[in-house]
Length: 372
Image 1 (cartoon, rainbow, N blue to C red):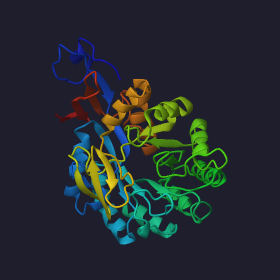
Image 2: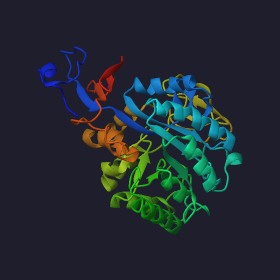
Image 3: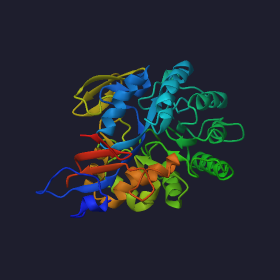
């Protein structure tokens, strides 16, 4: 990250647009671990690779050069079909992986997930979906309190054996249940030399989980403590809607950028006008840029690109270097991909050039200009 020198071409910097009147900032391509769609297309609803590519292109044009496509809770047959579509794109290198948000979640904290499709933990279904993902399953959101998540033969065990990570979220767990599930996952990861990462993740910290109360702490303090110890990576949707900017700044101060992954949780409306959209089996209405379930009113994903989240994080008072680390370098460690996430010799040439307001000037992926 930095500003190109005067002799940028000779130094091997990208051929950035001419802008003598304003400085430019060069960042690594961003890495989004949690994204349901954009540009009018929804990964949970995409039945073909061409439909899914619409969302990939939308986020790529705004600086996200490594994208994990997220599904939502759905019937097993639907999940099998959608995973197959996304696996083909990951095989082709167009996606960085797949995230399953459900179906083993708390019905009490389901948020925009369809409670009628949530089911009990099923390790065999995990193995089927992981096989269909061709090794590209990165994370799966699970409620740690559910019987069958932790322990031998449980969902966490099946995920880790398949090269994926449990991501704790959509949970009504107690402090004790959370601590036990985190410890179980950490132990299993430590014993697996083929693991993608040594740290499980947390699905959009604060959102979709029991809030912190001083006599009933719930999962949040243990998740924060685990991230501070370096045992977890916590996702933050720091778009100004999902989490208060002051709390975003506090989490960075408490946990550090090395344990935070900024994410969008974007849905089909990212980059699109207000209107009515779909997220899996649910109708979503977007008004003033905020997506909510049409029936019930729960926040139903984000409408921002990851660069927008990065900009909001910096405006919240987080130093740019820390915000970029959380939007690129730390999420790359979750992927287990040493080729992306930083501007370093030997890594893939994923480069995002912005103006001083962190707005896109140019995007390169693997050294090729993809935007504008």
